[in-house]
Length: 214
Length: 214
Image 1 (spheres, rainbow over the protein chains, first blue to last red):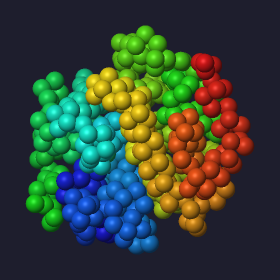
Image 2 (cartoon, rainbow over the protein chains, first blue to last red):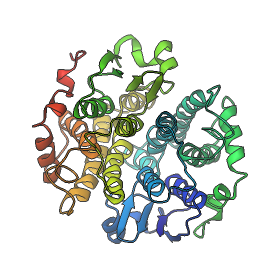
Image 3 (cartoon, each protein chain N blue to C red):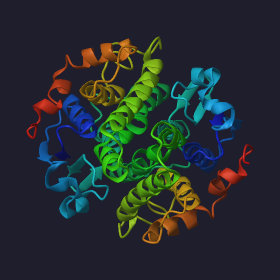
């Protein structure tokens, strides 16, 4: 498999963790989101992935964008070890936590959005940073509320095995730290992040450990 | 089942279509996003759904937010008629189209985001509308590129049965029309929307046909 990835992309980071947890070897193809005005916007990448976003997974004939669709595909085609619980209610809970990050936080703080705020809307650096923090803090506070005190929360977001929710959470928390967001009211998230980062699958997927890291 | 819904919410609209396609009866509980400063922000709703967003599905003991997680749950617990194709590659394609709408368009044009732009960032009405159109047009152009000329595209986004991609597409196109977005370069989307709206399941889920419609 080939993964078109950018070291700092948290959507690519999710998929890297999943590939590692499942022990699937892959080749990284670096797409630099800042070079050449954004390599993801070049025609050859757009032909592969019309959304002009990373990641893209290539598996034989299949060319697939959207990290959450990629995760479901990997789970279906390589079910071991499972990254979703065995029961429908458990799977629903894990997907809801994952989607809270993938839909309610990440899209608002994506690079293309920050660029639009700056260049098209002439938003000040200060207001842009406030925007970033706002959506991270609101979104992670929701995730904390979904996790804290819930009987299904264990060492990880759901029980004692890492899964979709954890591999969305860790990249988002990494971004939160990079932008100095306030995690003080989120002890469950911080605890689970720490537990995840004990695992090689998470550590090796981190931005700093990618071939295109700067 | 109970669905906490707002007639105009396109995320709730997706779930309403899925429930109708599967022939599942449900009770609508209206959550008015504008009344009382937003009924979704009231403590009793937040206890149910900490993200303070609609929809929320209640099925017995399960209380579930996030429309895409709800769709997967309905597909697992009520598999007939299927809203995903039988093959992993097909399912991946459908989920990628659905997520392009659910992650790359809808979160940026959500009510809470438009309110933040207006009240916190003091963005002009003109710039706010330009923002709205920009993300719809960029996102739907990607979806058009994923659909047009692809051998799996049929009467619907994938083959000749409606599924996850269609039930994300129709509410998003309805919003695009409401905000006067340019759909002229999107003949495949417009054709599929028309085909969907021939079906009662789609028509009955439309905002105007909800008990809380204004």
